Amino acid sequence: MRGYRLRTAAVLAAAGVLAAACGGGGGGDSKSDKNFTLTVDVFGEFGYETLYKGFEQSHPGVTVKQRKVSSLDDYKPRLQQWIATGSGAGDVVALEEGILPTYMQQRTKFVNLFDYGARSMQSDFLPWKWQLGLSPDGSQLVGLGTDVGPLAMCYRKDLFKKAGLPTERDEVAKLWPTWDQFLATGQKFQGKVSGAKWLDGPTAVLRATVLQNAGSGPGYSFFDKDDKFVFDTNPAVKQAFDTALKFEQNKMTADMSIFTPPWQTALKRDTFATVPCPSWMLGGIKQFSGDFGKGKWDVATTPGGSGYWGGSWLAVPKQSKHQKAAAELAQYLTSAQSQVGAFKDKDTFPSNVKAEQDPAVSGASNDYFSGAPTGKIFGQLVASVKPVHLGPKNEDVRQAVENVLIAVGQGHVKPEEAWGKAVEAAKKAAR
Image 1 (cartoon, rainbow, N blue to C red):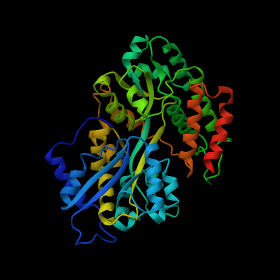
Image 2: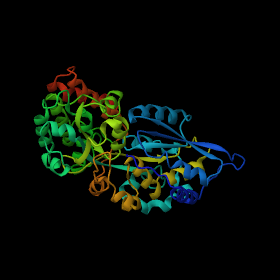
Image 3: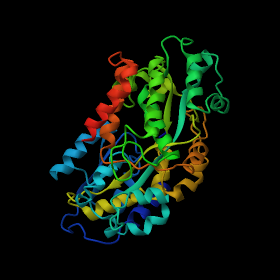
Image 4: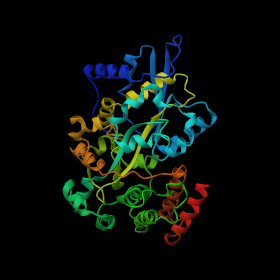
């Protein structure tokens, strides 16, 4: 997520050639219906706005319209209703990693992208990203990978300076090789800057550490690989919950969840100093922090050294009246060239290997984030990503547990009762 734009005619012309080459098999759209609109449903920042023109140029009569909501939590119920009722969904829809398992169980409601020539793209993607978009038997390609979410830590260097902490990213990273040391650094920060908390909230820490712990441990989090509920017995989950809880117990967070209206407003103020940030979050920070935050933010490695959070796939619901064109659009948007463009625009780090290797990605720096070498930082992190199995009810459980942590910070739940409340909420959400 970031502020580079595709502006040259040469880039758009090349994009048009690429778009024309996408697709190739399966059924077609009616020739009599030459002029139509394709709708793309996304959440947050995907970086597609400047890419649609290239597709439109190679598909005369086709207009691409994007529908976007700010957060995944706003997006989920809408998509759920559209798919359940068989009406209302876009021609191309984004499936985030947490909701992908839900719709993989409903894959008969989605087009098989193999029918439209997507098999030829397999070698372009990170193997695990491609695999997760497939049905269990490998016969259906439900989704094509967009971005991945290599995890870093975004921090306000101006607030660090006021607190007497190092400000250069390499020195900052040395402060917190572990989450315990990150907490200890935060305790030094607390009280040094009036009105500022160390973290935005406990939820980002929970999401980051659950995936870190699960990736280096059993390979699953709330549900095991047979989709059995193991939230209350998985040490990777308990350790992550305890880590997030410590920040609430010490009153070190602003008790906010990412992309909510209070979080968006807080980014224009000195409300918090750090936020665990996958690559895609940089665009959101820039969007909501605006001119206020330019040059104040920087990017360092995260406690634990590596990890990931998020990333999505593009799928075509069968309810689309223009399945062939929609499949071609999905292939176009996930191509190497388009993923480079999306990264330039919004820092969504590519899952397309060819895009990752492009100098525009690998050598990228981000002026908004104090010139941080984001291509190098996130490129090194993505190589160590260990994908984690997520169950169909993962997002329901995640949201329920995060609400318990927020309630601790607000004084509605006692810290010593938090784990029991979280288990209770998780079990209810998993039903």
